[in-house]
Length: 154
Image 1 (cartoon, rainbow, N blue to C red):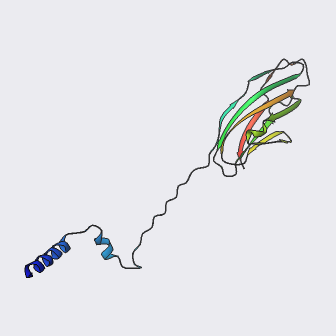
Image 2 (cartoon, one colour):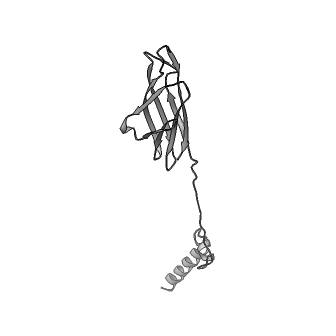
């Protein structure tokens, strides 16, 4: 039996001499004296982009009136959303009516010099706008696109 105890003692001593990769730090670190923390911040820049703004360049007028469809695709990651200002680019333009589908997810409201279209949350919006223009002059046969579009953050 003494040789069995001797072998156990030798095996235990040999294990203590083998380096352990995780023991080195844990033995050196005393409670309250060591610690590490990592502070990661991922910053996503604010993005507001008009991906598409398609409309006819020229409008045919019949009897002093013209109508056209405008497709507006806006992508934004702004928390509070964005607004698009639609203003008259042609001062000689008479009446102007603008409509969009209620399920488009945007709010359309008239303002002094045109309309304001707002999306109140981040995302991608595809909006079809129906314009109706009255020139007040039946002699006008064609009209250049009379709307200026500007986008801004809320």
